[in-house]
Image 1 (cartoon, one colour):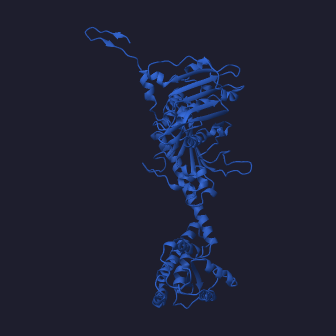
Image 2 (image 1 turned 135 degrees about the horizontal axis):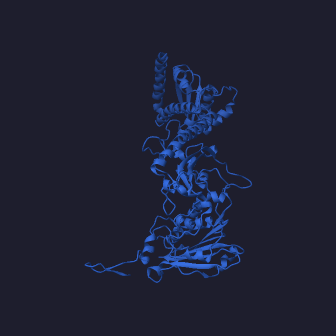
Length: 577
């Protein structure tokens, strides 16, 4: 501290620019998550050209009341990259010092020279670094300790000294260069000081590493977490191998639906440009044919239930995986993601020279395009996304149509009623029927029925089994025109509706409205017809169920009502023409 004197003014003391003991504590409260903090260290390993990176969590037990809980005690990250010379080790934990020279004048993953230090202290109070740049030399070691800094016991990074790697990791470095970073006293494992369970953290970090560094893993980089290999996770579902690709069986891969580029001038370099690349994929058809497929067990294993939004890559390293507001839709301010948007993937990649267009911050996360670039991206994306939504819907409609065509004419409605039968009132009509009477009634129904597929030689025994196995059955019959339908109640709450295909309402309304699909019609039209047919059949089945709850002595009244109603309907429907 020095003194400055001006004539006529009181004495003023000058101060250091930074109060080191406080600033390191303040810097811990940044926007890093656990995975982002670890990612900053892994970034250095990737830039050092490592072919193998290993991350370890060491654990300890702590008693909380009567419970023993397990906590993460240390995080160790080792790599077989090019390592650092003693001179570089001396500044690797100094804020603002970039450790890597850029190749061919191009920028790399790092930016401000603060990532490794800030990432480390966001998680731990003690950080150690071992490194060597020659396989025949010894390792050099340095560290920072936040307790020492806070208590004004240290204001510089200790000079590197030769020190052996801990014995349990020696075999990894045998004959190799490389670096080891040890984070201990990990007191901020979720950014708040709360301790997170190691098993939960393990899954979180594995997913993050596999997705963030997928381009490097695809190119041959091996990453291990607690000795288990981390497989790549591609949000486009185009690349492999993934954990689901084995010699015996490989996962289907998505198709690239559209690729485009946007050329932008590089800030501060007159006349030079660089490209933003956009890739959009459509996930495999067999994964997405039914509504709700995105939440099933196999989809969750593949993270499809989380696949909503876009992935933004900087220098092949992911810096954002999220929904970007106002990126879809041509109208100003329009922003809407739909459930079926998980079935397409979008990847936007750019070189570090275009950082200003993506508002990249010092922590390399949360990148978002500036307004003018977002408008251009929106123009590129909206048409493709709209088309993909149509394709996804069309594929589902086709699948539904094929399912409907493979079923009997009334199977959907029969099943819908059966699914709800447990909550519907029990039948009162038909309870006093004997087994013999039931079989006689079924014989009568079968003698009156017609085949739905035109095969009149269909064995009656097969029809009998269908009626006996279903709670609700709809059987086509040919009756005089005054009957539209007739209800039969059997044992065990079974109901049979005999639907008269001779009635004018069936011929002029039901069949034209929801009959068989024609060659000219598509899957959507077929499904619409099937839905109308199911609705009409549910109307009849609901009536039959409602009347069945009344005792047998009331049934003559309902039977007369159906006949009178059918007769009047026969008369009025004929006037439709």
